[in-house]
Amino acid sequence: MEGNRKRGGSSKREVLIQTALELFGKNGIHATGIDAIVERSGVTKKTLYAHFRSKEELVLAVLRQYDGMARNEFMRRVEGGGKTPQARLLAIFDFAERWFQQSNFYGCLFINTIGEYSDNDTPIRQICKDYKKLVKGYILSLCEQVGTSNPQELAEELALLLEGATVTAQVSQNPKTAKIAKRAAKALIEKATS
Image (cartoon, rainbow, N blue to C red):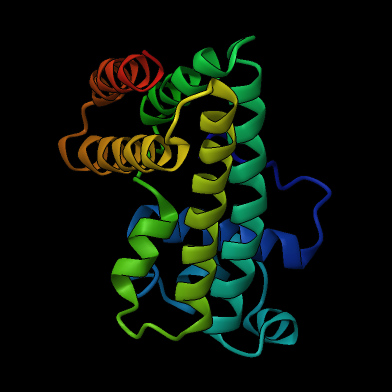
């Protein structure tokens, strides 16, 4: 999601994770080799393998770190986006609009990663599923605060709008998809609360 951490003062492990995150986000996991990560990070291959026994272990570390960073930023921005539950639900799409406008927006790392790993029972896919489940759970908690008779249904609709807007923004490179999704979300929220 938004922002990148600076590398100054970071441990070599953190530098490797941050470098891999940037490269995986931009180029994809399978298209990013260990050599590219080593070259970009300035860390030796020996050091990389001292921290991570395999590329998969590095991928898992990247996804775990990104999970924490992305979720925390998402929730913080949404909570700060409005005083009422309805306003916070709409702030989801304000957050998305800012995210889609970033020069380093390459879509959702979790969606992109799941597209690269077809086996259902891998730890990599599980981290991606867990992230989406937690975000949807957060959206559900906001829907429950709104006072609708079916918060689960509204949460599913809003989560789908967010996912669809994210993929559409990535494919079309049009950050206005968040505004379109916000209009649809507003109509869904009004219908659910009327």
